Image 1 (cartoon, rainbow, N blue to C red):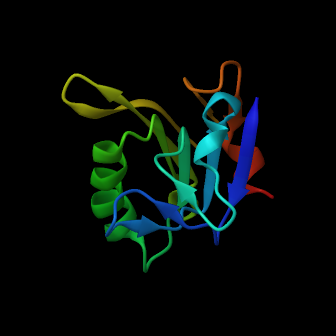
Image 2 (cartoon, rainbow, N blue to C red; image 1 turned 135 degrees about the vertical axis):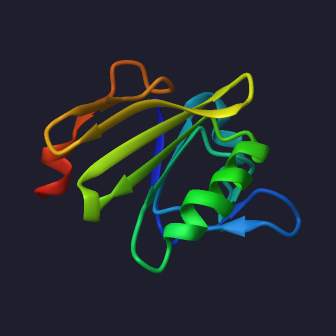
Length: 124
């Protein structure tokens, strides 16, 4: 299926853009981008967990960077509001394709059949 990696894992998106997503997934067919010391290219799925110090960076700067770089799916986990947002590329850029708060469920388009109950994540 692929490989899940956690921070701190460098993801080299361009010569000058290196990020460390909280969680990332690289599909098996794209495993060649996984290097010994870094991921070289856009992961298939990136998850960022918001904190007070990272809200602007994750919602705006990283959102735009991941979109431009070809990340196929971007999840924002918001513990303060007990919510998860899932973004997927659309005609005009990333579109919010799944959202849930408190007791709802979000589903991935990249990982067929993968869905998460917000309450399970927030209570763990």
